[in-house]
Amino acid sequence: MSASPVPSPARPRRFLRGWLLLTLALVALMVVVGGATRLTGSGLSITEWNPITGAIPPLGEAPWAEAFEKYRASSQYKLLNEGMSLGEFKFIFWWEWGHRQLGRSIGVVFLLGLGFAAATRRVSRNEGLTLFAMGLLLGLQGAVGWIMVASGLEEGMTAVAPVKLTLHLGLALAFFATLVLFLVHLRQFGRDGGLLRPGLRAGAYAVLALSFVQILLGGLVAGSKAGFSFNTWPLMDGGFAPSSATLFATTPWWENFVDNVALVQLNHRIGAYVLFAATIAYALAVTNAKLCRRASNRAVALAFLMTLQAALGVLTLIHVVPLELGLLHQFGAVVVLGLAVMNAGLLHERAARERAKAQAPQGLTQPAG
Image 1 (cartoon, one colour):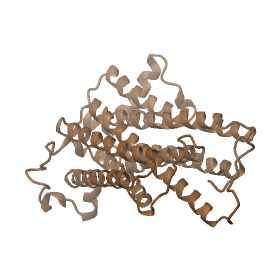
Image 2 (cartoon, helix red, strand yellow):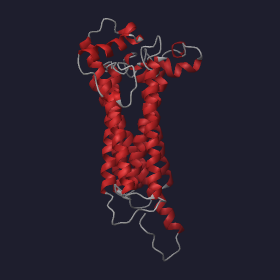
Image 3 (spheres, helix red, strand yellow):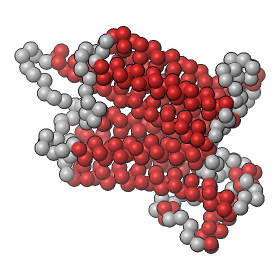
Image 4 (spheres, helix red, strand yellow):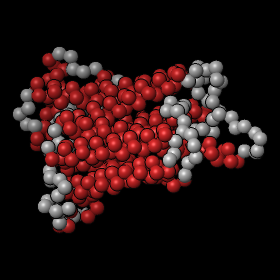
């Protein structure tokens, strides 16, 4: 991205920053609303996918009765919610409808913003291609969302497939990460000064990778509802881990990693321990290396937020995933990921400037990139 020439300085970048920050906020909200949709059991309440006409909710008694009748034909209703009233159906319907509307809004905001930026030449060719690729990623995420819902509407299913839910979440966060990186490119978060040690940059990448993997493990916990079992900490089933017979009760063995609530939860716990230790170690290394104040403050903030997130995870578990704590824990994960992406992006940008300076002939000044 940095290799692409920036448009004329006379053209303000303020629009790009505002547009991408708005999209970023909407995506963060989307992750939380998606979590609420899952925790309230609302995700399968709308049994059809109509990208255009689906934006209009039922208006009047007859449309509501028709929507309810379609839901009553689903396995979730027959096996879990038989006898549900129309009022109860409306509650879960509005959660899913709001989730889908927010998704549509993100698509419209991103598409209109990209079109305006391109038409007014606020982006270079390479920047435009990068943003277009990000739009394709957003479209793919939406398509996977419907595939995910369709998996839960199959005969005998009462929830979506955990792997597809995790993929849907992972693509949303990948898009979220690209927004943060583009904002780094636009210098929304400023620039780091001072020298940078390669090992610390690798540490920032490691914290970022571990953060993303941990959220995916959390997606499997959500998809399999593993958080509603083994609700003690630090022990799990009376020890660090349940017995191997419990962890690998399903055949074939690999299905235990996505469907067995014991192993799914254990993996999420282990991932949390590793990420917490890595974040604390990274913060200590950056502080001891005496990097610029900005980099040190980010590392300390990451460690602080990770500590809060870990505490939220424990509280959510031992209280058996109440809606408020579940949503706070999910939002905390988004905040930690966003800061980890920003931190890695800024250090990468700093390293690129150092390489460019080292490769430039002496006496020549590097242009601002």
